[in-house]
Length: 386
Ligand code: SF4
Image 1 (cartoon, helix red, strand yellow):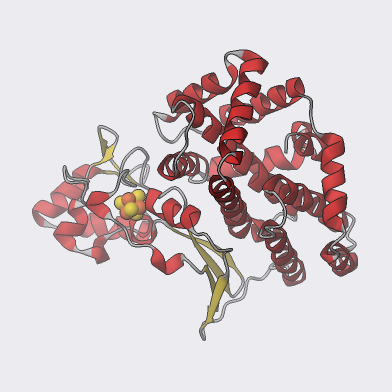
Image 2 (cartoon, rainbow, N blue to C red; image 1 turned 135 degrees about the horizontal axis):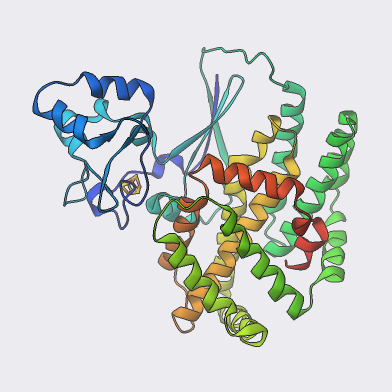
């Protein structure tokens, strides 16, 4: 088995009681079957407490005031304190580690939904690299398309190299990867897999950067159109399952800050934000690095999963749209803070976004569907808002 992790992976340590948020509140914690059986077998007072604190029908821990029934006042887990780490269910044992599974391969990342992990990911200044390790374990997935997977991993390497090319601004890098993924998708759709190597070589050619720049310049949306398109991007949330009961209020405040006073006010705030970045080169560089780390995070986590549905272009749209939405949320926060945005605020809003969007199969499936088939998110439309 081959294991891949981002280089910052081992920097993570749960800060438990010192956590600014906690992963044990605000959403349901699902219990795997093995742990559920083990919990059911527990005897004595602890067994009684387990029996009362679990929603056996939905396989999740019950909540008290939106907090896990085992989360104590010090924000520590009573189940862990009482019975040790072995008694934790799979979700609690692994979180915030996220694993993507392919035949003979595990790609493990940290989820940005944990604020501490988000701090590590976004605080990484250097381009992310990936470390691999192999062991003797073997497995076979009968239907696994290894040819497609190999093409996808080659494509992802190239996409990540584009996203980490710091000679170009992040919107330019996003345009390039959208264009590439669009072309890749057409080869897959038409069954011309043998053309993918040629496509990769063509995109490795330096001059494509300037083509991407020209394409982008030609498609920039007018202020009014951009305003309407960004509003449209935010309408995605209406199609998603709500995980945190506070989320609708939070995102509606963000939308009000951005859009309620109309185009002029939206554009004024946007210009002020970019002026704020420009007036301090370090700040501007920092912003570009945050955007790069977001894009690389989404691409590393989801892109190769398209081996199961043959839709890599949808995964790149997901990476770009999620990054754009987080950028807009940052601009709303900038307005709320009367003209400033610091690292901890950016980390906070990113982790809220991730927590709400990434931890629901229903939401991820809905986004797949939207980015594969919804005309609102076509190439021209997305290029125009970069
Ligand atoms: S959110 Fe992250 S740091 Fe906080 S308690 Fe959970 S795993 Fe630990």
